[in-house]
Amino acid sequence: MAAPAEAERTRKVMSEAAFQGLQVHNELDRVLVCRHLAEAWYLIGDPRRAETLALEGLALGERHSTFGPSFNLSCLLAELYWRQGKTGRAGFFWEEARHIIGLGLPGQRLDLAVHHFLGAELGLGKVAGDTGEAGRLMAAELAEIDNEDGRKILRGFRCYGEIIKLV
Image (cartoon, rainbow, N blue to C red; front, side):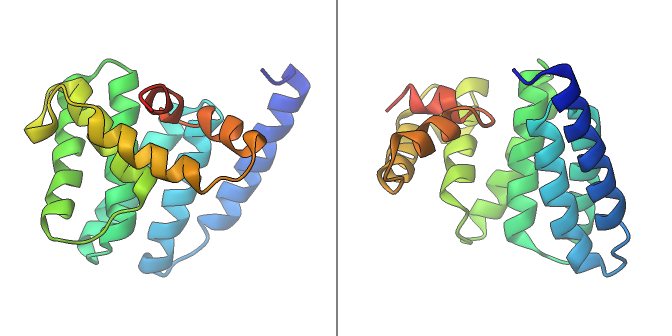
């Protein structure tokens, strides 16, 4: 856990980055800014800001059919609500992500692992209760990381550590 002074500096830098990033007026670029800022806020422990930016980015992403970022944001929102015990909202965004997969578009492997993991945890779709695919996807991701420090870092992000336990 970061020292309070370090955590405060991190929040200040994030606030400044968010301010600068949100000056982007092109909606396609703003989708990406929202996506990255939402994940960053989530990772440093501010789910409220993460949620606000993820919802904004998802709305813009769906308006402009940016399926990759929309898939990422849907998975992030599903995970965020799952962590908060809001299974109905988590399931809604899990279904949003499933719809994007259903279009035949490839997702990023880590997002796909999260999607399969949350589907199993929430008892949704064909993956209800089956974490096998999430574990297989994560094993492939881990195989590409050539050092233990990198694997250790990955374990600390989002729900990746819980998925890694399945490998």
